Length: 168
Image: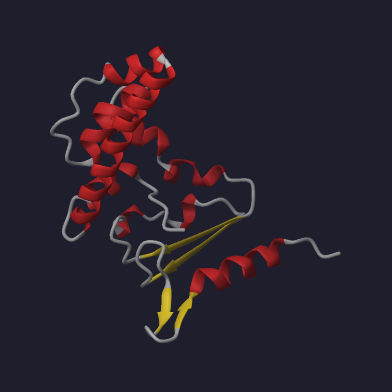
């Protein structure tokens, strides 16, 4: 649901408009998590892990995903750069190789994903069902009203899974 098919394009999208509020929140959370991780590694005497985090240097000034992934994610996980990480870790490049029945549900108004980031039918494997909805936001898909909301995913996912079950 609400897959960031192209991580590079999603990193660009979340830096625009109202989505920047989410980006600031995510950056604070991820940088805070790294600080907690350093303290935990220190406390547990995990000196190799602590050295890996310290080797990143100061993380001041990181404001967006490109910076975070270039200065943290890529070096910690063996990628050359944020671009290298985004290319290797973006699911869009691998969708044609899916061999297990898979349901993908995406809203065109997802504030973290450009419409042009969504895969074309020709990129999908035959066992993939891709539902593209005009509205739904990012993992929202709420219908109805405030008094009587409906949750599309709560209905659709079990329905799809039941259709996949072998008939006895």
